[in-house]
Length: 172
Image: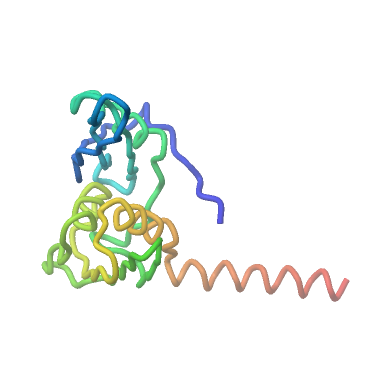
């Protein structure tokens, strides 16, 4: 499935650091330390992006990850303050389950899922993260699940229109 990306220049984005990791590489002279940063950006109105980057210093790793996140912004379909339907996604060994919630429920999510849905602007949602708790895979799986969401009423109308078009073409 091809995901349509959004231009970030006309959006007011909030940036949040999800995970910061110190990674090392063993070389001839010893260990070479670098930093790995995972950042989520969103406008709180249905746009969200996740970026991952490495650098020798923490601030530059965070800045690079934010730049990657801005390049990978996607549109999320919302229905009021929640999502229009359930979604389950698997990425690597991480499984993310998202379910719409009634108004006033709040965000029932933890870790990377919470950061991503808050950045997207979802106020009421139930979620469960199964399998691996690796924040990189969980964050990416959450974004993928949010991009796959469709409003059921709109889908029914779309499919009905497609069915009528194919019948009209078949009948000549």
